[in-house]
Image 1 (cartoon, helix red, strand yellow):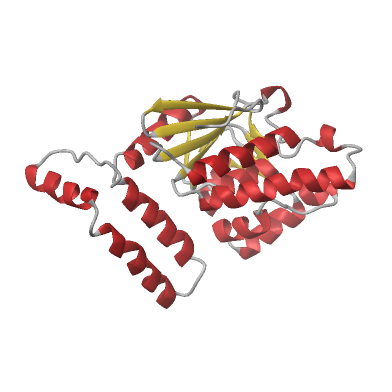
Image 2 (image 1 turned 90 degrees about the vertical axis):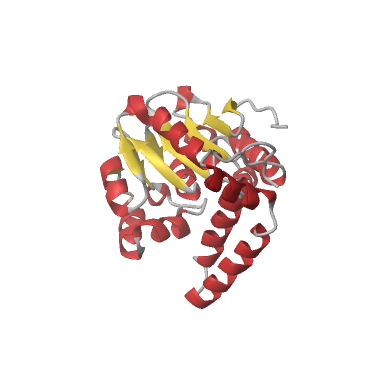
Length: 264
């Protein structure tokens, strides 16, 4: 059961694909305290029980912004305690996004600044509209990226470029993001959702337990050396041997038909 939210909207265009939309278009989908809390609640629930979902799309409402980052108007005059409380919601939400059992695709439909860029980085991969813009602007505000960006950006684009981008707070284009490895694909704005749904559909058509184990093996393996990564990869592989989906995959191949996976 997806928790109700005032700043987010959730749709399920097919049985196994969900679309979560940051829904504050009047302020470029900026993250206020309510959105930070609702993101934490949503991903807490999703991580505990994905249900029938096999892939999630994360995007922003409207055609101008994916997410402009923190709501600076709300933060203006905010007490240190309230600021820390809001930030704690976001810190925990980002960890849940990174560790979510099902793949998450960010569809960056417009500006992705500050925390918005960090949300895209925390997703498993991202497609961007050709008009999208990115930036981590926190050093202009007297802080640093606090929702994982100091760790996820260098892992995506390399240490030297990450230091340049974070310390200069310079914006960059969707084409730059693709060239540097932050974005997988750049498409015309009118085709972004279509491309994202197609990718999500391809993922959802595969064996869900295998997809989850593959994601986990990659995520964990990339945090260790090759030898231990290979060991973990085998540990993630072995439980799949006894699954019904493994048998269905082989049977469907032999019978020359599309497999029907049940997640068991």
